[in-house]
Image (cartoon, rainbow, N blue to C red; front, side, top):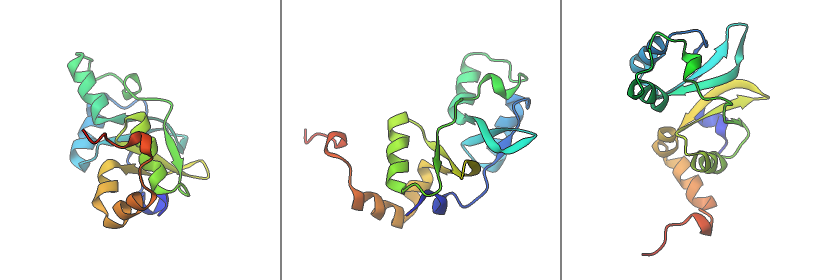
Length: 142
């Protein structure tokens, strides 16, 4: 299975000048854990992402939530092309300790895959099992 199959829905985006609290509100209303940050004049190029973790960190550090979201966004964006196999998407998420990855199609913004997307579909789990986890990443028998 390829990444583009799981990243079916268009990503939710915001611009870097939007307030942190407005992006957090979008996340709460849409029940999503990641917003892709794009410039108004280039809505198909991800320049950053803001995750729930970023918002929580901002609150914990007393960041003014009226500041532009660019102050807390993560950049550069970790992306995969739509043709990427799902097992490699899972590997990238594990390697970078992230719960979302941005999917592109020929470099243009296409969608987002979350860890929830990976575990929600039986066919994806079967695909991950089929490819297996390399020995060095398997838990010890202890």
